[in-house]
Structure formats: C-alpha cells, structure tokens
Length: 353
Image (cartoon, rainbow, N blue to C red):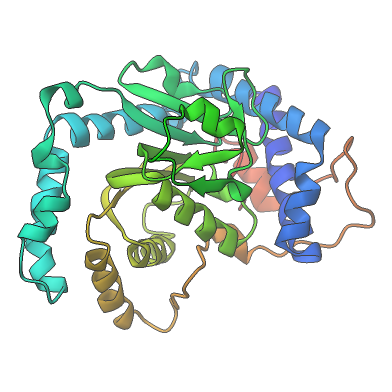
C-alpha cells in the first residue's frame, strides 16, 4: 500500500495537470499556458513535490512496482550505451542505407554515407561526453552519469543546477557559426540547433495540455538534435502493454513524418519507454509513415501536427471559480480512482485515468 504521504503528493501532481487541462479547454492553450506559468507558488510546490516523489518514494523504494518506474533513468542510460558505444548507431546507419533505395527514388548510397558521422568519427571523438538535453529535468538526475554533458532545463527547477526555461516557448537557433557555450546560449533564452546527441522527455509530454503543443515540443527536439541523435520519450501508463497500442502507433506515424524512426521500445509496469532516432535522410521515416498510415483503420485517424495521449479523452467539469496562486480545486475521485489509489503506485503522478 502507498503511504498517505505518497498518495497526497501524487494527488497534488494530478490536480495540477487536471487544472491545466481544464484551463486549456476554457481559455485556449496559449492563454492557459501563460496563466499556468504565472502561478509561481503552484510551480514552486510542484517542483518540490516531484523532487520528493522521485528521490524519496521512487528511487529508495524496495517495492518492485515503484522500482520499475524509477528505472526510467537507468533505461535511458542503458539504451544510450547500446546505441552510441556498443555499435547500435552503426547498425541503424546500415539499416538506413538499405532502406534508402526502398523508400526513396535515390538509389545512390554515397550521398547518405557522406552525410553520416558514423564512419568518420575519431577515437577521441567517441570518448567525448554525449551532449544530453533533459527537458523537464526537475532535479538533474542524469548528472550522476559521467558519460553525459547534461543541460537540464525545467519550467520550475527543484535544484539550483537546473536552468529555468520554458521549452514550449524557447527559441531554437543555429549557433554553429558562433563560439558560444551552451550556458551563454541558454542565458539568452535560446537552445542551440543540431547540437545535442540526446534529448530526454521523461514524464514531460503529459504535462503539456494540448496535442498541437506536444507536437511542437517534438519538433523542437528534432531541430535541437544532431542527425542520428536520439529523442527519448518516457510516458506513464499503468494499463497492460497493448491497451493503448493505437496511441503508440499514432506516435510512431506522426513522429515518422517529422523524420524520427523508433529504434527502442519497452513497456515497464507503469511506463512506455521509447527512443526515436533522427534519421539522416528524413524522407525514409516519412515514406514509411505515409505507407503505414494508408493501411490504418478508420478508428485510428492520424492527423498531422498533433500528438494525442489517452488523457485527451477525459472530460473535465467546470469549476465555480478559477484557481489562484495559493490553491487548487479539490479533485473529485470516482470508484476507479479510489481503487487505483489503494494500490501501491498504481498511478504515476502525471497519469490520469
């Protein structure tokens, strides 16, 4: 059973997400997000609560269900090792070369090889730290791994080593012609393009209340990544592995049209863990996505420029009054919520049934 303190913290996180979604439907996503960003006291408490949940209840718990969820960080690290240091990137490059003639009219492999960094990497380059952008970092959990040069950002950081940054409205700019450090660029409120080896969205996209804005975040990640870089998406789901399979299929197609190809996937007890590779030739995942989308049943329409999550189907009752910076509305719980809350970590903080 989850402790009362654990349940209280998880319910607060859920109430913040609930409130933001309701405001989005009421005001529109731009005004709702602006309103949310101005709730300084709520954001400060949210950061503190998430920090406590992650470090006290998730990482230190002996319960296998909780450990399966906190392993999201280790899962990202393991996949990065497999891909960048243990031959995974070379394997994916070879696959892309083979697919080029199948999905595109260009049958020449030389152009793709010339664009690739795989076969032109010196041993010294391999030993450099991987540049990792952790979006919604909270407390910079990747800083403990020496293989990464971490750039942690968050709307409301929980620790001083995390940069305060609204990724949704941050500008992605090309600084390749300037000798500026990442810190200097972030100070200007911008993020460098074609710079990062890894971008991590861990329990982040569910925070964004609008499908169009989630798509926008993925577009920004695509621009910030180097070719062959990885976008990790960790999203909560306490249901069985195939319950939300149509949503996962929708993501693959939408991100495929953007230029991403999913190379790693695992369903943990409460999480979907995914790694998307930024293809050297964006036409290859695009052609795949277009081909697959044609064969989809009518029950799974794939719209461009949106990224749906199961919570988008929720209905939110109107509140008598708006939130203030000091309080949040009480969240009504139905029988299903009560049953889930009675189980140990049956519901992640950012997961809504």
